[in-house]
Image 1 (cartoon, helix red, strand yellow):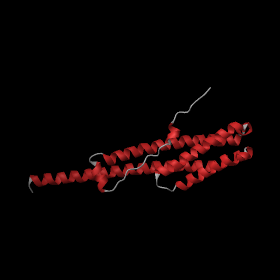
Image 2 (image 1 turned 90 degrees about the vertical axis):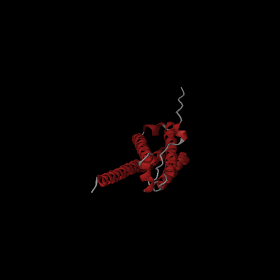
Image 3 (image 1 turned 180 degrees about the vertical axis):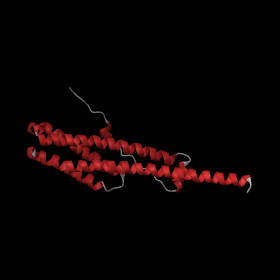
Image 4 (image 1 turned 180 degrees about the horizontal axis):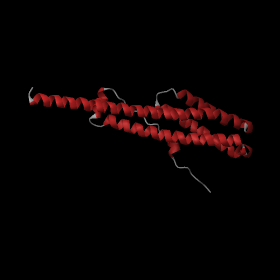
Length: 187
């Protein structure tokens, strides 16, 4: 064989190794995004499990606040039903509605001093607050992995392989614009 053949074989070998390497990195990033989404699911499940306990604790103190409690239960059920939905935006909308409903139930506690002092309510409030923080951390982790994956499938030369193998962009798990506004504090 001539030197030209060895050069051609070497170039083809390098191209094959580069393609395999790019493909493997795309799969790693895709799996990280899927893992990050499952972390969000775990925290959301924890939140869903805590809400019925919170509602039943509040019911004993605020029986005539039925509308607020029904909104929380309705928002929870909508979020649980949307959990199976693969559309990240619809899931985010349902979760944002649930967050708003939970804010109203905590605001309700301001009107009932006995409820505010109830140890069960305080523990549930602390647990939900901790869960909300974990959801925010999981959301940030998910969005960072989505950013990395989306960037990888859009930059050259990995975009050539990503397009040929039908890798699709992931959506970000975004907060509602009303939640993004700063909280107004009045004295």
